[in-house]
Image (cartoon, rainbow, N blue to C red; front, top):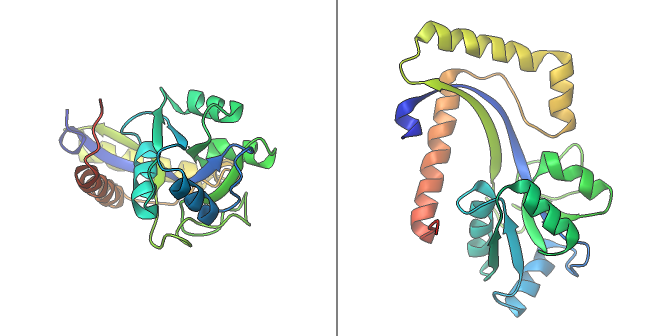
Length: 214
């Protein structure tokens, strides 16, 4: 199976930054303090991910390389179990989906040090982007609609048109905005370019970092 060969991009539904989350027991109150703490204790900080090879894992590996730190990667079988153990303090750090993590941050059950997008988040306007201490750092989770290769062009265009109409409805637009899910009108060609850029970027990084799924 090759998604670039076997699927046709139809519509990019949403893109969401990640939050660099820590358990409240962690002493660090900023990214700089977190990096300093990790450098003082190489390989001793436990970082969760939703699974080896997933976007949370890749964000962690990119952060570790850019920050020059050694960490202990703890892969879970999904974001739910990873978040549960972070809440319980079994692991101390996690790059989590902003949509699902914001409620825990606002309640004080987790601390967010930064986010991985470009601009300030509507739900957490005081939270800085990770690109402040690490220029150019951006990672996102995203959702899109694909159809099998061979699907006729009229069907692709009709689906794209209807999905664009859906995200423009007031109720859907407000729900996306409240969750800091970035969604905007797009064409199949625009989504295909985004998909190719993301694929090429992460494939190159995986090779560079020699990331393997055991």
